[in-house]
Amino acid sequence: MSSFFQNISLDFLTNPIFNLGNTTVTFLWMFQLLLAFVSVLVISRTLKTFLTHHLLTRFQIDSSSREAIATFASYVISMMGFVLVLQWTGFDFSSLVLIVGSLGVGIGFGLQNVVNDVISGFALLLDPKVKVGDFIEFDEISGHITGIFVRSTVIHTIYDKDVIVPNSYLTESKLTNWTLQNSGGWLSIKVAVDERSDPLIITEILLTCAALESRISINPNPQVLFKAIEQDAYVFELRAWTPEMDKYYLTESALYYLAEYHLRQAGIEFPFQRVRFDQHKPLWLLGDRSAWQEEAEHLRQTRDSWRPQPGQYLHDYLRQVPYFEHFNAIEIRQLIEQGYRQRLTTREILFREGEPGDTFYIILSGRVEVFVEQLNRPLQTLGRGQFFGELALMLGIPRTASVKALTDTILFTINQEGFQQLLQQQPLLGSMILEEFQKNRAELESRQQYLEEIGLITADEHENLMLWVRKRLRQLFNI
Image 1 (tube, one colour):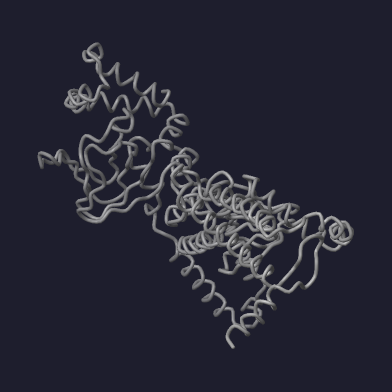
Image 2 (spheres, helix red, strand yellow):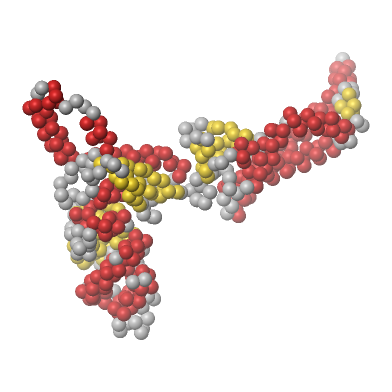
């Protein structure tokens, strides 16, 4: 009985269904063909994973290039595998000539978009300008490219949704690739304030907002541009660099929140506020002039209560520093643009000896202690209006001492790039620094042995240390 069913099953699988050229098609032939095709797909998918996550990583190839190479290789292996499988099953390719010829016209018209998408998919894989992992924006769609496939590309949007876009649409559309060169980029916000506002204060507030936002980089420094003077408003633009361009909208929103809050706290009015208030019917027209006067006085006191008291702005602190006490408003604004505020808690270590000396600090409030950690010996205590870090910064040497906060302290921090720009804008500042070096010659000479040990001073320069300082400043800062 069992042999009977076996014979029936074998006959069912091997009986010819139809002929395709010289190839006899049976159920067994189709089953073998399907199994072989599945094996080819599994092998190509495994090869793609191996190339992406194992082999190509050893050559330090970036993730987007690895994805493109692995995808292209898997396509080639799949096509070669399909051809070899058909040959292995004895398929007669000459039988396809008539079929392909008869369907050619239909494919040309009916599947034109499909063919275009496939060709565009290969073009995207070979084009380095659009890669997997890039953050792109087009037609109100913003997101990361998570995969480029034969017919379509998958984009993971900022709303945590996946959008499937035909490849031909990407190749034919104008799009913005925010991460073509790197993952960062410039973003900007525009703010219009009342025409009675002080531009220096607006500049300071906007730069403070940039320093407070964690997704904004302090190098390069943020910039504030005075864009326009309109009929009843001053228009400013804050430009800042973010290393996370894929979070552009979140960062932009955070900056607007910070700007609105700090401008309101400073009593800075927006131009529409005054216009909106003027549209209300004055109270004295309602017949109660005393009520109108009380309301006006209340509004004035409320507005004035928002304004910080004199001395609370950054430019007031900076004018207490001997370096900058004679700066005018324009020069103070240029100085503010080169740095940012930094807060320290009590006993917090700012830096340690031996660390790179690439920052200049001005104490706005509080006190710090300069000490030698190895000897556990304090050198000096600095307070409000004083500065430190200029020796290592100007000479391009590591820190020769450590600094910690004795109380809660606020610093104005300027990096090397900003300090160099400041020296170029204020050449006399370099001369003032040299004068300070002359006054602190004893401190410089005490570190002369250290400079010789690290190879910055030669035997010829040992006798004239200030001459070496001038050469060093000219070499690093062109002053």
